[in-house]
Length: 177
Image 1 (tube, rainbow, N blue to C red):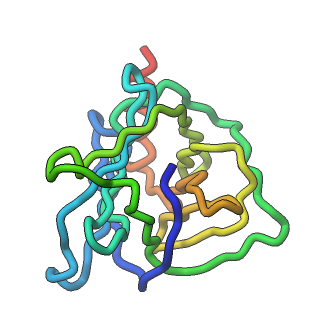
Image 2 (cartoon, rainbow, N blue to C red):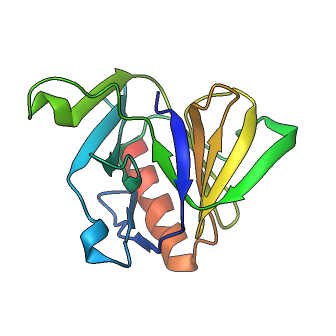
């Protein structure tokens, strides 16, 4: 699982989702020099569920979130939020020490695991774990939830407009068929 390491200043979010890719979020850095090569963390069962998160190879800062396949979609999933949750604003930085090896193999880390997407009124949650969330890091309209071991438990995309929500719902319903 991805582990939280640090927070940087916020960056704009660009939603590139379409019917074929239900969630495709890019973090657009205001300074082009801040762009760097990606490392990729992939999870799912690699049969009918797959998510890929791009993080900076050197900095560890999140660069993209791409949901390719989803096997579990709900409207009633619950997150377990601690009453003492700490809330911070910024761009999450992840620990990259798990990526080791040659240049190609070093770019991809695959961990088998299930996740689900919960669709709300004007938001969508990607839920990786039912662990209690003790830290929420908000960057623009994307909120990252972490447990007491700094592991990523959830990602929320807030304030979805009608078009984004329609694309998400239509895409997810097509995947489920």
